[in-house]
Image 1: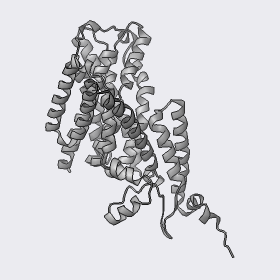
Image 2: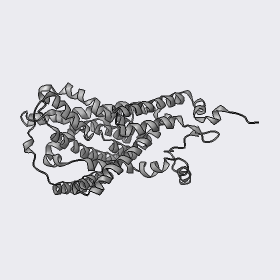
Image 3: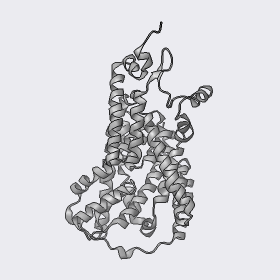
Image 4: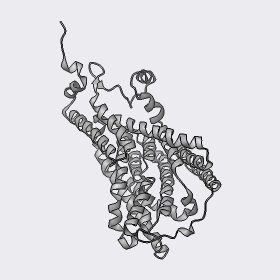
Length: 404
């Protein structure tokens, strides 16, 4: 006679009663959090390109837990911990996203693909036209990626983990992913998720920081746009190849990031429409989609329940806050150097969330003075922020192994 067992048939529900209470609660919370991220993505409050696939993955992976054996529960989506070759081959034939994770994610390839797409979208004209002021602002905006490191170490994180979470202050998701995969693989999931969740804060939170630190009369300063010389495509391509080569010589560990970004810039300036269309659309959006989806399915309850995740949450937002303050301090320094002719709001654009922070700076200045057009200067600082964040990633990835 057939023995009906409800929990054996509906294993997602059954495993809720098989695991300990904390894990069960965490799974339920993460299911609803995933649904919430999808909602916020569809509303446009959070970045839909990342949040919709991430939310679906997060909700599904915590619902679809089943009995893998008589004594083990898990999913057939991804096993991030498998390393033994025979076991890996078996998992590749079962877990449906395992090939994406193994061949694109765990080696940082997906981060490089996204970075290549960002390069195609980036116009470095303003950086080449005003390299010194742009780079100065960007360096000041790295305050969070530098200052958070010793704070994280003091809170009990090792050097690799501290460097990875400090990179959140650069507001560059692919850079955080790449750094954490190399230096803190055991925590790259929560660190990267924190990075992408907090990127929304650069749009929603930085305006309040600007209003707090920059009075309206200074936000209203008009910038002289006549000083921008024309930058030709050949100059931008030459700049890209020279800078890429020099940075790769200095920081070989970060060479994949430099190559990806500057190759994207060169393709943009070369006018090869087929490559531009491929990198800007197919490669960037497919990589972003799988980045969000894989991050979502890696967000299992057991991963998030680690007490270190709370530290990562605190340190991530601290790093972004300090970077924003550092950028605005750099804006004030430029204001005094130029005798009051530089709008200090541009400083926030040094935080390399392209082009969000540049748009935030322009929006706040326009509210104070509709004639205050500072976007070219802000974009110069914004693109410089991408470069300085990559340099910091190179420094951390190259130096941290020798500090252990």
